[in-house]
Image 1 (cartoon, rainbow, N blue to C red):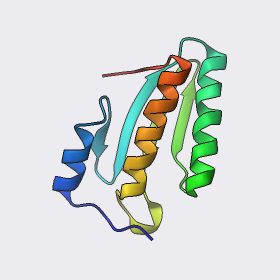
Image 2 (cartoon, one colour):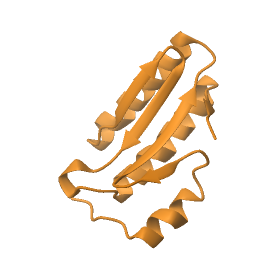
Image 3 (cartoon, rainbow, N blue to C red):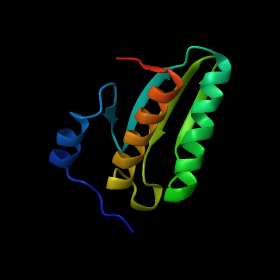
Image 4 (tube, rainbow, N blue to C red):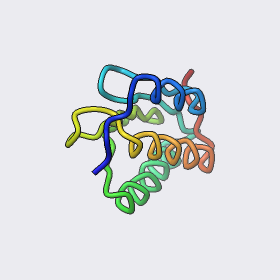
Length: 102
């Protein structure tokens, strides 16, 4: 099990995640893919990472836009797993040509 991060730890690590922000007990970001199939490819890639990590994001899709919300439900807040998954989402987004909404 992962421990909750402190406010300071979260803020420090968010500096390395452009377009990601804290919203109470979760991390949030939105990405826009160049096409609908590219957005679905992004979700598939993140799904593979999430399964490997056994840590699953909440997301919503609207055409080429994907909104992400990361939280460790068992801990009722943000843990290092959420930070790691945010980095993986950013990497996968870059691979499919999706842009973070800043």
